[in-house]
Image (cartoon, rainbow, N blue to C red):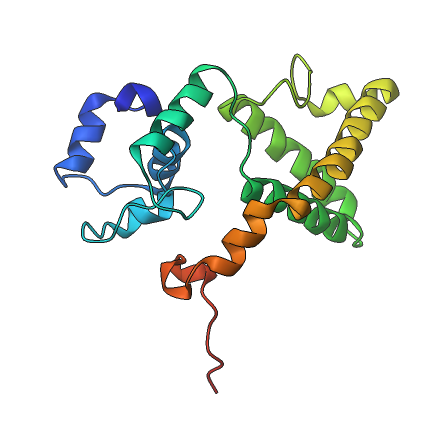
Length: 189
């Protein structure tokens, strides 16, 4: 497991033996490698049924499918990740439209550079040798990246909304099966 998630075997064993608490970053890495829901891992409820990262039951078949996808470089974002990426775009547009939007834009660029260095990025989505703010000083590169982003939003948003799986998933999951932060809260006065 350690090799799958980039942690030492000793660290994994310490979590398994409850000498260390499972951290959110490690839970997310395990989820990305195996398909198990990271929030299910953090809840640490051994009596709860295994839950996949798509909120369906976690099965051996799903695990092997996810492992095969990773081994073949076919790691495609889940629909939830696609929707969140699009939502974050709207957040950024709203933030960048403020009086200090230029500063926020620069800080966001630096943050994205650090993320790309730390986690890498999918070159089939953005075929660039590196992701650095300095690259965007070249108008042709800026335009190319903007065009790719616009194309992604245009093509993927329609796919995501039309996806039978997303709508079935959203409307079929009982509230009790959702992670606590996604459950509808009763109005309390």
